[in-house]
Length: 142
Length: 142
Image 1 (cartoon, rainbow over the protein chains, first blue to last red):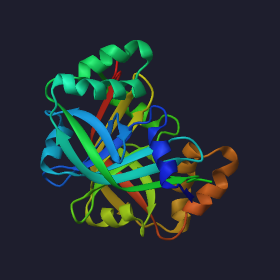
Image 2: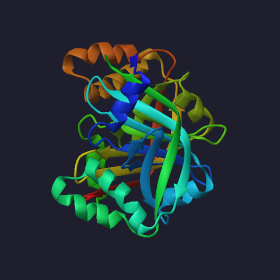
Image 3: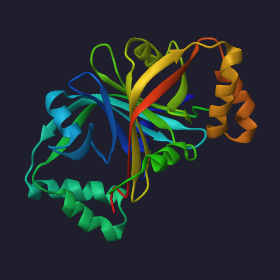
């Protein structure tokens, strides 16, 4: 097990089509975890979700989140992010550049416009997680 | 987006070296999420963690968990598991078959014995999550 530097952790988070597993807490105290598409923007981790989604509802009430991003091949590696989420409710036009930037990371070129357009709609929240703690470990099983 | 049958979800959970991202809730109400190695055993999802680990400590207090297992390539797929964890504190000898079965899933053959031995030690908890809800979705981005 070897700790990553913060730069290495950030590079790991942004590499390829790795998804984030967003951990939140429901009103009744149960945990919730679900995969998200995200990009880094300075010290923020940015993703989109619909205001009607379970995570959208949770985040309106409770800003504390944690994310896990990992590599599922030997010798395994992971980066954990803790922070607080702030929500923005942009217009479809304001969402477009984010929707496109996120789609660029996750879908093939021929799906890019269709995916970005589908997600840049009224009701989608732009979520910014101010990353207060980043922990990266590689060589977990070595 | 296409829902998986429960059989498909179980096959997805058990395929290859996919890790589970275990969501729990800390004493102060913050979420915790971290990758785990696991296997299915009937209706239980089984993993090991040290009693001194943060998730070990959390699980002694709060049994409700959720897990996300996903495929990070287009068109993306995921399975979410909800349930309650029960903890067993086996001897090293009792742990051995579980440690070996989990290592078989996650490490190359030449690392198998060393990894299984390293994890089958006093203080390791065997955690069984009785899966009460399994939700599988494939073709998320298609």
